[in-house]
Amino acid sequence: HYDILHIGYPHLLPKLQGKALGEFLGTIRDETQTTEPPRSIPYNQIVFSMDVNGANDPDPSILAEALPHLGIFHANLEEGYLIVNKKRMSEEEEVSIEQVEHIIDYFLDQGVALVAITLGKDGAMLGVHPDRRVLQQNLGQFYDFIDFPETKFTSHAAFEPIGEVNATGAGDAFTAGIIAAVFESKRRKHTTANDILKMGLAAALFQIDTVRNSDLEASTQWSDAVQFMEYVLAQDFPCVSSTILQKQGKSLNLSVSGNQSLISPIP
Image (cartoon, rainbow, N blue to C red; front, side, top):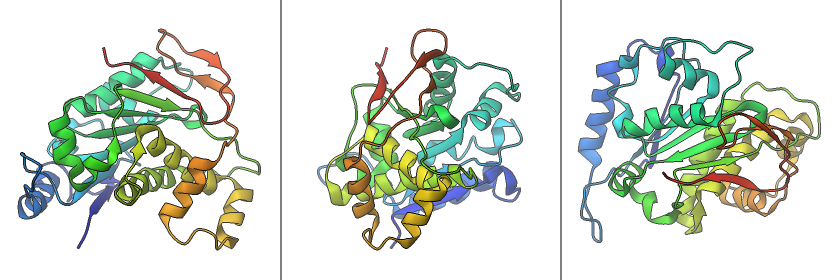
């Protein structure tokens, strides 16, 4: 029995793109979809997640037929920008909060339930689909255990490393963290959008921070993801003081510490 199916690097899998990818997910959905009380609409027993690490082609047909099936989607800012704007970001370009929200909205509009965009040292932003029917269908068995905010967008600053940084695998670790947060919501019974972001950012931190990575490998205190998640959510990790995108038209300099998050309301 499987609960979550993750697809990574679809742009690098030429035989699993477009129609083939959509049919693959659709077949699994059709064979596992169910309706159980108190639900009144069918939902996916297996939740689909996707990370577009390595996205190198803005052709929308690569993802178009898969997106309506997805419960979880992750891209970094450069990948999301390429897919949505059909061009690469320039190194000098400053991106506003409206542009990040526009990228997230593109994927939400295609039917994705949760869209996470990582912003490097500026943290990450999570978008939640405003239609509860989409959330129920694409998050399936986990829908009842996530406390969805009254807001579409939630963002969180990145955590401060204490050792040298090796950024290899940061995106993969972040994705694993948010998937684990959704998966463990069923056992925790109470998980927020901010918890999901914090788990992803903490997983990335422990991957890239050489000191914390060594401590994690040597530790025996976390026997499963729930224990690690409870540890993470109880911590008040220092956050990076950097340019955090706020809903005021342009990027602003804002120092954020602890587990403070930035919330923008649904229009």
